[in-house]
Length: 246
Image (cartoon, rainbow, N blue to C red):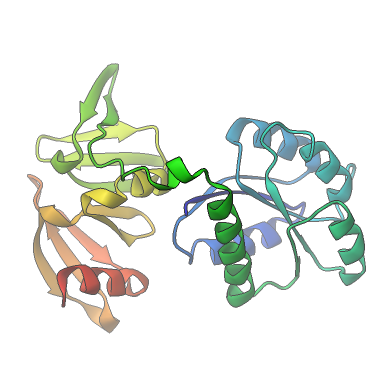
């Protein structure tokens, strides 16, 4: 289950901490964050997340008030209140919050919430949608200047995030995509692609060499013209070893 998540908290350190913990988990796409309810509501209408982590005590419109606006959306997201104040718990569940997290957050507690959300959304998914095969035959739309290139997944060597852009590398060259790396990972999951690092997605059929590296990590030599080296983080090494039976 692939989850689109939005974070609203007026404290930047709290947003950074929650984002960091969420990025340790698989199948997560953080589609945005906001420092107040007004900006959050506007962005949520645009990004349509599955789940919103929402602080309660904020200047202006607070989290409980914002939750009532979100409940009126055609595609209303699940809400998890993330706050330092335990006394708001009852009020949170009165507005049908899915869960309630107390600061400071822990990875284990955040993971339990994400796992519960994934199960609920999976159960809500129509049966026909659950049976839908992986989008292995779909072409990925790529861009180079003002030209548009539909690209078959098997031609992609790897994709990498660089300074806010997602570059997709083939043997012929590199292209931009408007998809996030997490969205590409979801689309290409049935085509032999795995995440090597937070910023890299690789085609396992385009790996030329696997090089053991420091502290249980690996380096991959890829099959593009530059023979690019991509580091596999320790966090992702387990998936690589499983795929290649290392």
